[in-house]
Image 1: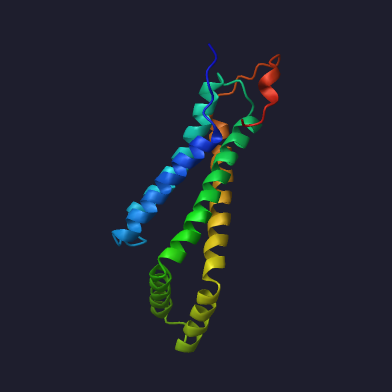
Image 2: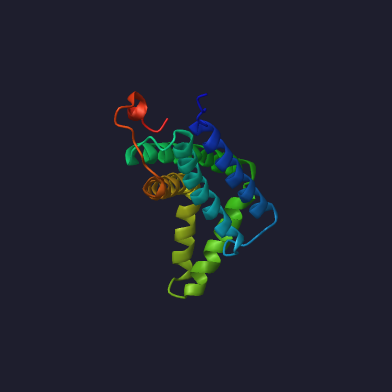
Length: 175
């Protein structure tokens, strides 16, 4: 009996939903950005991708190469990235007070440094307000894809590899 391989889409949606639930809980419970709960999103993301790669390896009896495992992990992280970009856009549109809170926190952080004048702070915040959506989407895109590539490399490195050179399905990249 052949084992079924859990699709990349299922793994990506599951991990993205966990990250979205955590982000919503953090926002609605008004938890600070520097609280330990913020580290949980990194644990979910990193652990989720490594889990997806290792479970993929187990489902195919480890009959894959490093590249196959990396491709699988990167596909999962790309799907998570797409969902998180959609989430951040919808979230900013539905909750405009998020932008205002972020601007207030940025103002406080710049004022604490004491090396900027009030005019410089206002100029920086005006630019940030104007391009807030671009910065949010761009930061999400780059952050998740770069982290996803690194975690996929790690996951591919730690997953057992026993490729059967005579198998015809070894060249199916990442499934």
